[in-house]
Image (tube, rainbow, N blue to C red; front, side, top):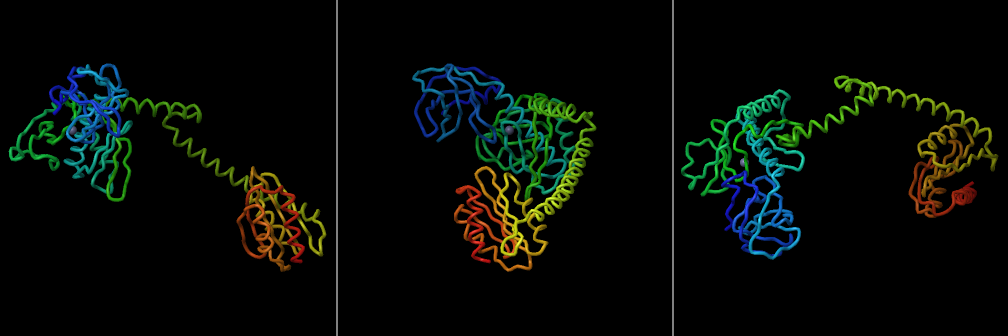
Length: 399
Ligand SMILES: [Zn+2]
């Protein structure tokens, strides 16, 4: 079994070791070492990265009781020099220890147990056993967590051989193993069975910030970051604020107000545009009626448009057939699609549904409606004027 150097000294970044096995599995080429400083995925903490003999270690997993170092390219050597990516490891140590501290703050102060923990690439989450969380509670937990960090309490590791030796210790959760147990202890604050890597004191977590709390069905997901990630988050958010400050010409504290004003203004403009287009359509209705073609005793208004919306044409058609003896045949062309609106006044009895149904198959289309008002659409398989000819041909049979 590989000796786990990260349990002797979590700060060890370089080592050399004999290779005891090299092989392939579905994840690629891997080596197993006599000893390693590479932490494999486990206990909610992602694996370490780094190099073995300057070749990248892509991931490290514990499979069938052995720690497999998956390599970018295969190597055939008896001994290797290993270097772990310390920035990545230390970040994981900060997040992991921060999670212990935050979990304890929520549980001991507010009675909310942590159900699960996820250490993501950018953000960490814990799921709390509660369906609601107030701003005050969030603030309370965050403040306590940062107090524990600032107090720079030791984070101690203690190995215990048998479960029985643990009686009297206020362990936070059920242990996953029953012997050779590793305890992570922040004295008088948190007692946990845990196999992950942690810094030697809470001060190294540096800072903890809760970002959002999201209500799920039966629990609440708390997003947070620790250590270097807090600075990164602050930097990202600051950039967003700087951009908004310039774009909105508003001080940081006035941004919410400026956005509200902008939204309100947009809504007003939208209403004005709607109002104006309605007015415009009324003019268009008049003009189209004046220019309507006399056809079999009807006023026929047939047009082919480019890029007019279906809803615009529906409004126009509806206003036109408010007049008696009107037949409307509209086609609008947009990119490779055709849309059709066919309508007639109340005082006529042509069935527009049967007109449309006969023409739609020609453009692989779909549509329908009431006998006096139908709409549909399909592909531009024929030029629009030919589709119009077809509509008129079918219409003639109906009259
Ligand atoms: Zn831990």
